[in-house]
Length: 325
Ligand code: DGY
Image (cartoon, rainbow, N blue to C red; front, side):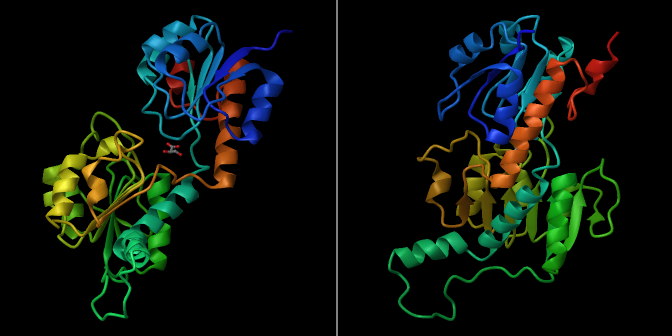
């Protein structure tokens, strides 16, 4: 039996790649940068499966370029805003993602960002390296305390809940805004986003990027935050209006922001945000622990192989494809 042809858009960790190589005739894109659009369209032609990353836009054009034999798209990420899910569903193609496995790594990182922004960690290191540490100063690099303060979570899915768990250990009171979330013992729901922003000293974003959440963090949102508040984003850059954030941070209308995600990615080096001391930015690495990335590769491979065999994907974001006649 010939092995099914697949295109893998980057070298993923061996734990997943070895499985793909064993069971498929796989073309694996070998470069550090993703394939450009024309290459992607060419490479998917005639494949039965695509294993892609969040850097690859999989839309109607790509699905059509692949052809009618395409059986599965497996995303090496929990977020799937890079994929036109409606288009895949309309073609009966299941789309897989990698939920759960990156919850702890992402929550750890969100908390690391929160602490770092509150205590001006990266700014302090730049200060030291610039030779500005001349003595111990009573008012040098003062930051924000956590104990007794309020953390507001926007989105209370797996990752939001894992951040709440960590926050309890730091004596934070936790609020969340997420109309679809179930009650939790360690966090209190609020009815409106305004209420969350009014009460929170730290605001951490854990919503997917959808048409509803795109640019949700705009000038109006930022104006409702406390002037001492810290904003953390480990979700998607598109949730935030970066110009509005720049204005708010520059005018110190909020204390600080820490972002692991930007729009675009990578963030251009001439972004005004990079001129600000009170803005900490990391290159989308919240899930970047060795174990987590091994398991993301493994789950992405499992989804791919299941789809190729015509089995239900272990993690499918459009299960309605299975209800079609
Ligand atoms: C995801 O999986 O959606 C993260 O943003 C990358 O790990």
